[in-house]
Image (cartoon, rainbow, N blue to C red; front, side, top):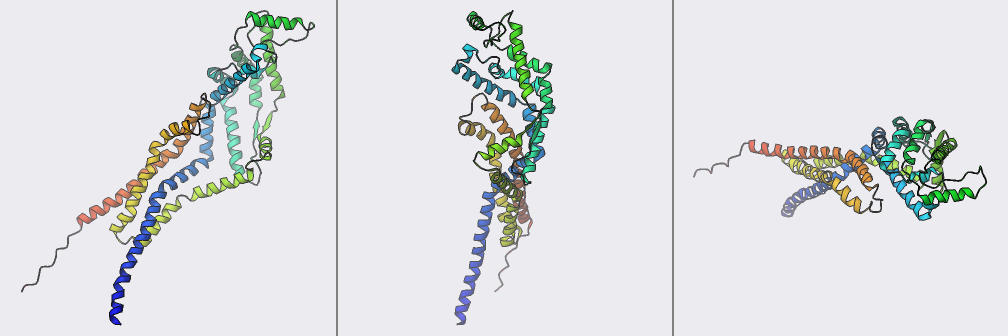
Length: 385
């Protein structure tokens, strides 16, 4: 009986370290594999749920970049194609039409018009009100964000020499009328009684019609300004969109709150894994370097990899995948904006990954130096005789 109990003790003593090492290996593997994901989720949360950062980012794009001119250039190009397909370029029946006039504008023209009409203060106001309203909505009981734009500064610019300058920029892009177009106008003029307005063809008329045609465009602009309200309640538009179906605003708000909560806790997960590893197996500097230092070094390296290739991925993968259907006019600008947004996420992530690698390497070097300095134990000399 005593001999059987003696035989079982060494067996149970060997099984315990194996189970501990197995558990420690699983925890270390989770740390290595999960560290890049934890850092990515944390940095996405740090950017997306940072209202001042988002506000500064969007303000730069709408004020200083070519995002608005490029978007309007795409609109002009699309409208020009529709104009030709519908025959509006030949008949001019819908003149004077500000939207049709815009179809002749290019990027440089839109840059000049933006400078005339959209002041930095107005654009900053639009961004600030929109961002503040959106983030306030997340923590409120409102169904949709409460956003109202003050349009008076824009209307004042339109109803001044700046609005006229915008018309001049657009009008100068009209092609000069051919004799055929002038004859078409004169023919239509002959069909109506004197004093009845006849709309000009979509081209620049010479004198004596030039001044009258230009006045038509100015009057059309002033008519548009007169019909624009002093305030635009984006809230009402959002409510209409929400009522049309799709994912509801309440569901969207719930998803945003969940994402914010998970992102806020992302940094705790690797810390919990580290503490579990320390509690399970770390008993010496050797086990600390092996079970903490090595996983930190490998996990930090894996987290570093996406920070080195994300720009290449955005340019090559998005351009041929998600953005493959995006119009060529705006695709470079969209890629630039996405890349700039990714910079806000991956550049800090690169620094974090390097710091983690340094910590892991430091633990490994610490153990290596300590093991070299430890005095070697000489074997005992055999007893004489």
